[in-house]
Length: 113
View 1: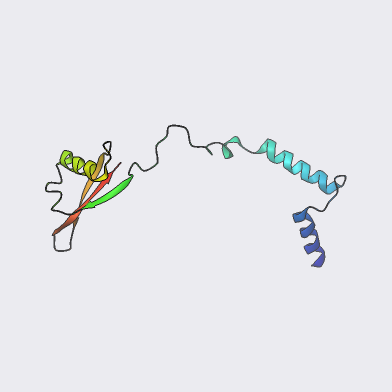
View 2: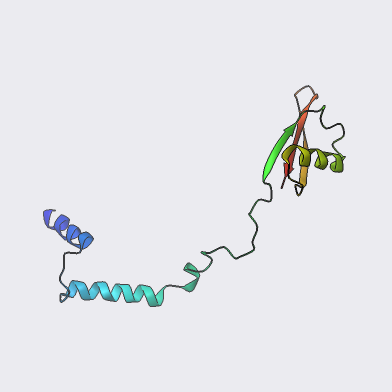
């Protein structure tokens, strides 16, 4: 057991000289890895330029029912979001009604970009 531990320690810390058979085996293993590894393992590591974030939603805002009178009025909601956030380019992506268990409207979730 002690000999196995010593050998594993030597391999991990690489205590072998350059002119030994162990060194030659390491070089062969490295070359095999370089030349026989599929290119697909290394492709796709970088994100292509110009690709947007996976989720187009930047923020979700919650509004009370008094603020949004009609959930179908996207233009009015968008104007309110723009005035609230100070971003003139803000876009409303989705509006979801939040309803309590008894059916009362609690508010609206508005996804913006």
